[in-house]
Amino acid sequence: MIEFLTDYGLFLAKVATLVFAILFVIGGIVNTAARQRGQHQDEQGDLRVRHLNEEMDSLRDSLRQAVLPEAERKAARKQQRKEEKARHKAARKAGAMAADRKPRVFVLDFDGDVQASAVDNLRREITAVLEAADKKDEVVIRLESPGGLVHAYGLASSQLRRIRNQGVRLTVCVDKVAASGGYMMACIADRIVAAPFAIVGSIGVVAQIPNFHRLLRKHDVDVELMTAGEYKRTLTMFGENTDKDREKFQEELEDTHLLFKEFVREHRRNLDIAQIATGEHWFGTRAKDLGLVDELQTSDEYLIGRCKDSDVYEVSWHTRQKLAERLGLAFEGSLERIMERWFHRGARRWW
Image (cartoon, rainbow, N blue to C red; front, top):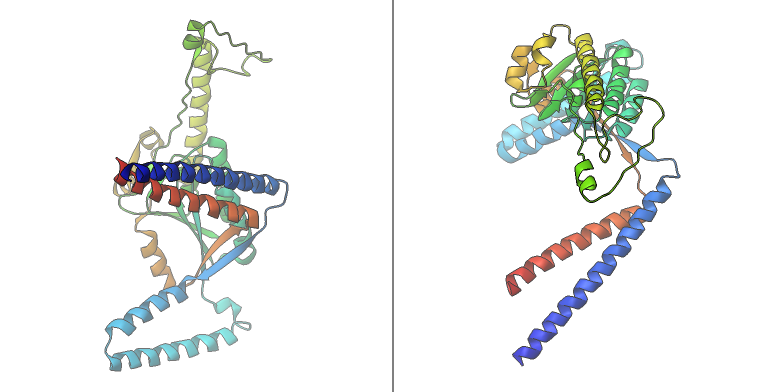
């Protein structure tokens, strides 16, 4: 009987594994097809705006409701109604007194990867904000990026420069890291605010490429690389690299580094470029001493302070996914969770 149950359990495990594998493949095919179809269509999405002042008020009211005595809660509600009435009255006069309106702060997020792929959303958000903002307003970028491709972060930096070019104040907040290409973006700001232990700097250029020439030669494999133009290709992965190739590649790196330093110097004129453009990075406290950042604060502290005298809006662009793509992603996620739980249970039972 025990042997039968053991065999039956193994049979069920094999069947379950096969079924999960088939469903996983089908889900992947559906998801890939949906993505490929999306490549031939214009990306559609929606712009979402959150009034952070209201969110702060809601948090404050919830806490008051929980901790204040009844008499104080009533007094707080009465004061709140009085403030709301004053705000509504001011809003009704806004048409005739537009010049007296409160400044607006538009908050955008940029979470950078190696390819700076978040720039696709960033450019839409900036375009929308610049249609509404004027010189009385401010744009705050909550920036997180360790850097990446030169051309990708060059484009991302150019998007931020659009804000400065229109005469709108730009502030960059760094809570964790703005290094290399991330700092290239940050240095455009009128003001850089960083958390005390945020990583800042890394003003340098790095390139790395493996070379398999000796391995291929050992196995009698030839690689033919044909070019037209003396420097169409310098270092290669499969061909033999020469000292001349290395010298040219190093020359290109040095020129890129020079452009990087000139870019930073243009926007942060108080910096000692020779001191900070060594490729090193610093924590926020040290970065402030060097002039890489202007103020030590978290983005939360900064925005809470701005809420006191400004209307603060979080602006984000969200791309709409096709139904098939959403189902495919949800299906993949569900399968991954199911298989993870199943394998973990199996490990406890059988190992």
